[in-house]
Image (cartoon, rainbow, N blue to C red; front, side, top):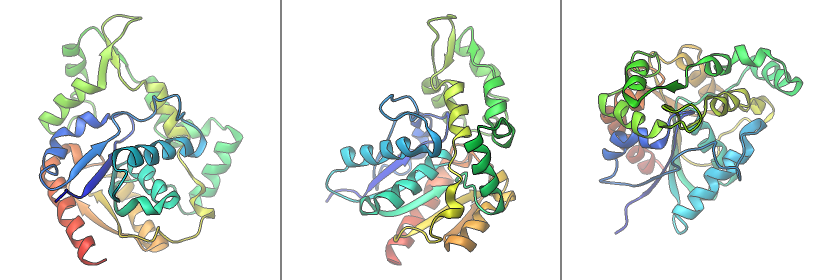
Length: 271
């Protein structure tokens, strides 16, 4: 008997290879597949509202699992892509779990979308784009990069193996400057932040017709801003709160995977 299909979509700037330890705790019971890196394929450019990137997720699911529905699982940027794919092609999904999505809802969404359409530079400050483009992206060696990145607020609480895996897949040789640079360029990462969809205030206020659950973390800025709570109020999507920060799947891969496993079983029972 084949395992249930699980399709994963990674966070912005964090290639799927970084999640190998997280996947290890799911592989026994699920057929886990993931897009290695999103944002680099010229067939699916980074554009306003991420529509081409959603198409990339849909295309990958159709290629990886042509004969069965998938459990859609995503983290941050990837969780929102997964949710949007479920809206666009619900027949591909049996259920969806989204981990700390950057959901722009409420009164801020109208203003945010207006600023995007106007090409306002305010978007740089309203998203992590401004910080991202200023971030260092070149090091003399893998070792230097590892030492420099480990104390960074994004990586400081990573599980050790997850950090090692990020270094292995998140860096590449820099042919121009020598040394190493980011596999996903910081300008691509910044453009993804700038173009985050903010049109949810205009959409039907209901979730796709399938089991959907949000996972967030106690120290996540999205949780502290009330975004999961807003999603529950507006879309009737339940949420659970785990320990850790926004990068919790890479900070606590075993605990997160175990919770995901339990949640999948509960969603299947409640169908």
